[in-house]
Length: 155
Image: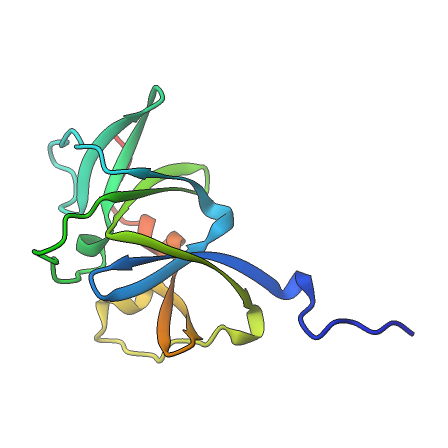
């Protein structure tokens, strides 16, 4: 008979937390490729309004998604967004423009809470779970939903 620790390492997931305005979000750290400072993007004609354009990332054309615009959050006029989180989802690499990277959180799957069903809430489909950490409520961003649209994000 073996004694298993209360938090089995297989049940723990690491998340990168970041801010968009006053709100906190996370993504699974396994989808994060790098974090870099903001570089002015080259706009693309007919791109969705939330796509800032593309940048050159070591010879690769990287589309930049303004996450505040994608999630229909009000722009934070007093803050100059300055961080790009480069993520990979289903073989597609995209930069997410956010206000700041906050922390790396290690969370047990049992601590993930299902968000309430709010059909009128357009942001709901982008949030897969909620984490309550200290006195903060942090949203787990569903990259699949966030990066998948009827339109093509990549150039």
